[in-house]
Image (cartoon, rainbow, N blue to C red):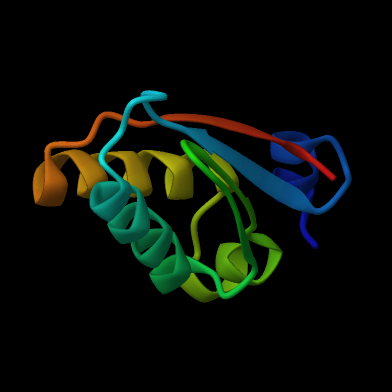
Length: 92
């Protein structure tokens, strides 16, 4: 990985931790997990309102750092589903 990537995630594999409202509609939650799966195939759903995603391959594929991927997912979730999502970025 490159230096920019290492600075962004502290040297480990970049992980996104997503959380939406605890009372999120189950269908919207399913759509959110599907949206994240469009960015990375390495997604673990943590029902009822969270998910964890390894974006190490996505960083290269999309040519974006993990924070940019998080912003992209957050913007898409809000635009497509009206679903506000908090996303933390860190190393594994």
